[in-house]
Image 1 (spheres, rainbow, N blue to C red):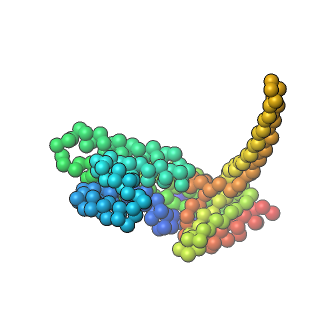
Image 2 (image 1 turned 180 degrees about the vertical axis):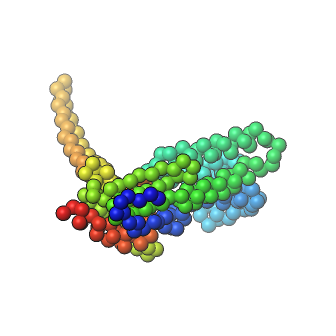
Image 3 (image 1 turned 90 degrees about the vertical axis):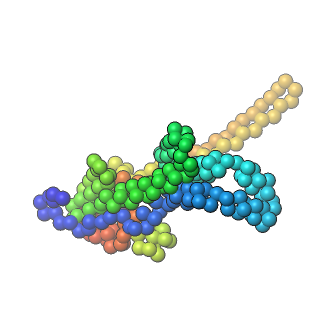
Length: 261
């Protein structure tokens, strides 16, 4: 990295290893279900029948699942998994990526029907490739902190780079979850004068009522809404899931104060 005059590199970090575990588990069900339906298809029916005896309330549902073709059942479970994943992460593109993967598997299996259990083998392959791609992508993410700048680099091929000058940072937020405190990672969000690092959170409530007597009717409604700015960490604009966040946070603050005076 080419440094500026009187610039000193303080930290050169990659995301914490826990982020690799957190991001790759979205593709783990592809491998697990692919192996389950490919190698243990005969035992799956026995497992479902055994579950009926332990959970008699779920017998109609389990019977329906047991009657479905194994390919349909695998696709359905993976679609539900990707839908839940996209809602948790609030990223619609996650659902799109997983849907593309499932349609690719379906199209390949339809084009090559003579290959036995091709769908399940492709599910395993996509799961492994997805895990490898995610790990490589995180390994190519770097957070370079100097006494003058914060540089965020990401991307495997072309790569993206964003730079924040410390003298333009007006506030610095450190976020650490319970797992972050235990494993030693956290997120640092720099907030600038242009409100970079902030987002809007809104809420609204309304009530309506009406009454009528004969041809005469009356009604009314009351509504209330409010919105407020809140810290909204984005992986593109913050130091996301970095190791030793408290030490990094303290060093950045040391360089903000002299420039702000």
